[in-house]
Length: 242
Image 1 (cartoon, rainbow, N blue to C red):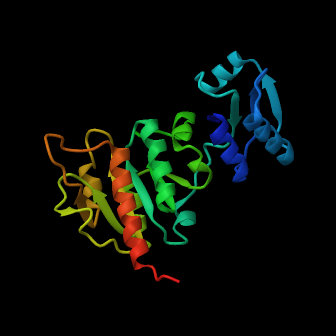
Image 2: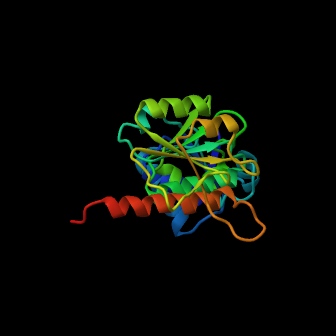
């Protein structure tokens, strides 16, 4: 089991009812935020163990754990069958390898109103504590689907009625000029290389973010924020006002 480190990620996982096997607390650590977390564990009957900071460093694989490490909350993956039931936005990551980028995209996707993030099993960042911490609690609310093959996942989504939009600097249309048809899936490529050729061929549309100057592309987590909130803006514009 990968550990979940940090007061905020662990607290949000507890509040959302995620399954947690046990929580380690650093001896001598205190404060109201940590006490709230301890109370939540006791309310839910989750075992608490008080260990040295060195033990928490080893358990978390980092010293940046704020005196709390939980086990069992990070590696729970959903399935496409579960996440597509409501026909919400799916964000597909084609080989994002930096766990900080993965966490930032999960956080942005949740804020934009996505239904799920989809990641591949191989050549991609898993849901480590680093990704969970970068997500700043969003993993407690947004399911992540892990698939064996992104291309097959896109084919599955198409069978379920999804329209696939790939973000690629070679796209003919700009992201703000295209209509996003529901249900929508948006595909983002990995750091440095963008979408794989096979993945791009599975997309119904390729869209790009117009750039000025000598930089050809943005960091994938920044690009995700731009495109996902444009999707959200379009969706809110279509929704009837009460």
